[in-house]
Length: 463
Image 1: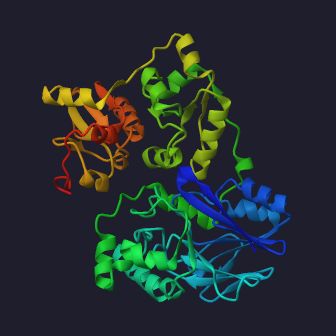
Image 2: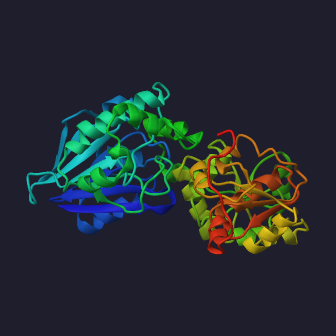
Image 3: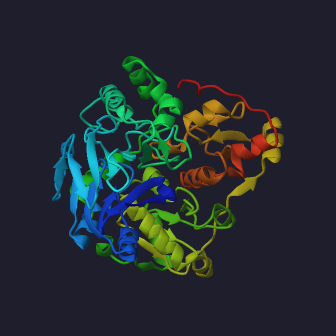
């Protein structure tokens, strides 16, 4: 049996291609489906089946386009309420392809419709050798239980406990575990970096599986949940109906500097996808920096929302194409166009550039001692709890879409995150909101700790 994992780092998303005797199955496809078609063509496979482990909330799936292009059937849990053509599956449903099979385990908890797929390849053994766990069981973690509009997190967490202990942990220890997400995904909070594991390893090392009582499990899973981005419910709904083909999206429209200046004055957003360093050195005033080098799409959806139609600012056509694709992967489809000629054209047209000051951690410490700056930490709560700079103000970047931190707009604010990616994004948002003296801290808390500068730990006040 053929088995391949495709890992999309910017979304920490894993999808799978399985095949036997020329018949292939794709599990949890990303929105751009060319990679599955190319792999199938290379090996002489025909994609006949597409399985969704659940209605994904953090990205838009390509199941509908892939089915249209291959004639494959789509399978999804019966509780999904999917409106596209599909086969609703329940516990014990078996999908045979060639000499291999996938057996469905209904595993509600992360979502009601969540399923896991037990993989058996008859040419190997009649015994299962792997399980595709979707967002039910991760490497080192389990799925978050707060993605249902009809059930409370406590109700879902209870279901998840039952699914884990009655279904997945009933599998033999040698069975390989392949989840739909890895470290960095917001669908869990404590994932390890590995891309696969075994049932036995997770039984021994996964913190959530060490909790023996259902009551304690529910309490742990519903305490201090990471912020749930607003776009999660919208992506799930897009996946319930099936997204349009990427080919149906209109081409990007070139926008001259004078037109961009006019639309910015009307409150539209310019999204600069260049590096933080380039952005700091000179950018269109009021533009937001989300660099392509990091988790670009997730942060764009989190801080801009799916209804945004930003004008892109980039250095090259390849950057524009990559940005457009990655925005579509999370459901931002109505991109307003792009600045023709980039920042250089803006400057040549006679418009001014804004800048953002940057400092290293040693200079930050000196300025803190003299009282020159106020420090703002924009990391998530678990990161703050583990280690933070004493007397810093905490306001996670996830909250910026709701409101900026309550800090004097004229104060000199030094902003940091873990390594500098999120802090430049936060700096651009603050500058756009009218904060006049923002400073980005180069290297973030990682650089601070490397210099062995003092840190403290503990929960934020009022949290």
